[in-house]
Figure (cartoon, rainbow, N blue to C red):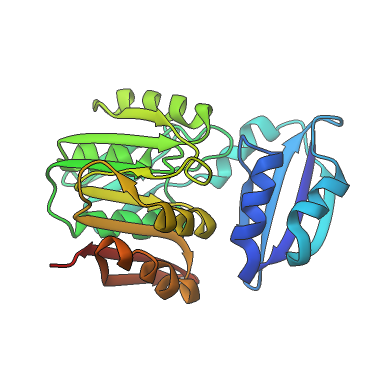
Amino acid sequence: MIRLAIRVARADAEIALAELLELAPAGVEEVDHGDTIEYAVYGAEGELPSLPDVRAAAGTALVEVTTTLVADDWATRWRDFHVPVTIGERVHVRPPWCDPPRGKDRLLDIVIEPGHAFGTGAHPTTRLCLEALLQLEPGGALVDLGCGTGVLAIAAARLGWDSVLAVDQRPEALDVTTENAANNGVVVRVALCDLYHNGAAPSARTVVANILRPVLMQIAKAGFVGEPVGTLVLGGMLADEAADVAGGFAIHGLGEVARRERAGWATSVLTAMS
């Protein structure tokens, strides 16, 4: 097994990742190194993207490309990247191989099978979005744009939103989300949609979008289709990009009312302006 990794400048990481996902649509591993972000994919020789394609995808953000041999136990060691997290002393998100929280019966225990690429909720932007959801009053419909493993969609269903739709451009993400929802005893509808290329995004009373900045800006440009958005939670942004991204949704009558930051990332909460 080979690990192909690239480091890119943090400021341009989201744009580079969007291009890299075209080469590795199943997802990539992400490691934060401060000023740089490392993205890695795994595979046998001949299965990985070519180095010229990888360098072209990273563009001017590229800092370094490395390839390393991975030990034979990689198929189990990848689990070490996925750890339990507790959000707001109300929600506990864990992979299935970790035990439930002890002595904390009040916690909502959510079990997420991450697959090899999508994560269980430990990334700062996912945690920030979960914190934002905990500050909202559940009710009505909710749409999770860019659902990954379905962490946010499943948490919303467990917290009390009446109807939850999870959207992603990757069929495998929808499969994982459906399975995880069933394992958590909730129903989450799923829909395949390329939010970057396919125009307006599905909407609901509450919308959560924890996705890359270029996709968020494209949604701001194309707008929504469906019921008017009352509350919009935006994640996946670097902290110094949050104001610009949130401002892009003003043309849809949405204004920023709260912002949270952690480890250089930000999540904004927007509501409909009267």
